[in-house]
Amino acid sequence: MPELRKDPVLGRWVIIASERERRPSDFPAEKEPPSPPPGACPFCEGSEGKTPPEIAAFRPGGGPPNSPGWTVRVVPNKYPALRVEGGLDKKGDGIYDRMNGIGAHEVLIETGRHARSLTDVSPEQAAEVVRAYQERLLDLRRDRRLVYGLVFKNVGATAGASLEHTHSQLIATPTVPRTPADEIAGARRYYDYRGRCIYCDMWLQEVQSGSRVVIETSAHVAFAPYAPRFAFELWVLPKNHASDFGTISPAERADLGRVLREALRRLETSLSRPPYNYVLHTAPFDAPELPHYHWHIEVIPRITKVAGFEWGTGFYINPVPPERAAAYLREAVPEARGA
Image (tube, rainbow, N blue to C red; front, side, top):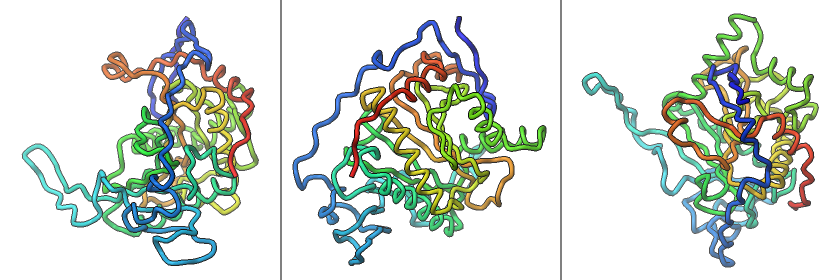
């Protein structure tokens, strides 16, 4: 029989359609685009002139900007959703409100060599990517026009990637977006009632149960959430309470790089390298440390369709119970990749 499960943070209900249960092999693999010919990819080392001038880069051996020798490079998005120049110019329009599209839109290129995924780089390089997330968020919060920064990653054409070379994006906005705002509000309601962080309670219960845990280290837990919207959805949480991703330590960065890379390797192995997105949710730039909120990463495979029922009701139908999804991922044996 189908089961209704309630997300404890947002209060969102999900239909777990267990009678439709599907195995990883039941999801068709996305057809990968051909790799570009040598020298054609604008994100490969040596092609620095094919992107806008860099905002930041890690160059272990030093060297001038916009030159080879980097491990991670950050450039403005060539077609930004928001632009950093100008003022907000907030105003009313009758019963409506408007402001200029001010913000930042950056691309974080995760390696100089051509690779399709974060799983194709070493654990040490994955930690450098996490470091870039942290440093760019810390830098952008100094702009008083901006109040929130979202790091996200698109892998595969279905998930919105327009270039094969592995990269993430960061968009900083002048308002707190609806989804993280709802998370913060939902977490506050739980804290006001119980006096505890719901995310801390969540990872503790998941570890004690074990049925939905995929990876656990001393610092992080990767698990299938109790009420996942999508088949094989994963969350990664730190064990130490922190609402602000900017406070992550070097040791925690290294561990998060390993855990995120390993979780994605298991996902890609089980589902034949599916398209997916992941998003990093953290506290707003101007918030103090929040006792009720917890930064986290949500990994969303794009292997099921969102159709009329979902759009019309807000209910999601998931054909893979999270306990089964976690079991498949725990049992996956990833192939050796990365240098």
